Image (cartoon, rainbow, N blue to C red; front, side):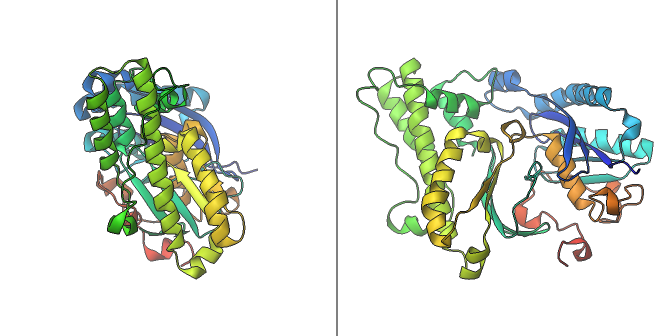
Length: 377
């Protein structure tokens, strides 16, 4: 019996060094996934330092590859993939060279692409659906109409540094979420701080279809300056709470506006929202989005709407998502009944010649793929 094709992928777009092996089953199955983070290095530099991050990838990617191939021999891999963008050029280059060297040396197919969600859904959402990207660098709402058809926040990290939260061992966003969920301490348990202003919610700006978080950070900075010069435990919890509330209120307000602005035909067929990116792991964000869908979108649709997330451990940058995207781009080679990865369809003239794309918009996500490869025509 012909076995399921296996694809090995590398992710190195920012500060996570990750390697994964996927099998082309229904849904795709993660056989092995190993990642190394750079929280301590980031805390020392107050954020991601491009050169130090690149140097860490040079050390860490071979380490995670050894762990993956310790589970499954390299000889069993049918194809390789890596993140071509978006991200930091030097960091992307490390993953690129790992994948290209292995693919060339072993004579295997290669794919290079951007990050996408929906790896683990047994029943993926039907097109069309909305994709809400909530990552450290981007907040975008996208209407997905097909596998190749799309239309077109470092706020948590910056806020965590402003509040002086301890981020040496965990991602700033996760630390802020944890502090925001803790019970308030005196004096804020008796007298909570007022809510931060919500951007683009009053006057003419109310009708601006965009996300804007800079105003929330500015408001938080003013509250910090007026309250204390060095936040204590009570301040860290309270500032985290009001920051998170403001961010999520802005997010749900603008998301509701965007849904209401969709053409009637699109709205009638909308299956729901798929949420991806690091901030998608935030439980408070998930609860508020579910509440918004139940109370707002359900009214617009006259029915319930789906809400899909990756598992929390797959929300941040990881190679499993890269491998999954490669499997999609190898169509019609996704499943073993119609797949021979030793002779894959040609999506580009030579994947070994593709340049890195540190800046890569979602609207241009598949501009290197011929129209004949697009799902649906």
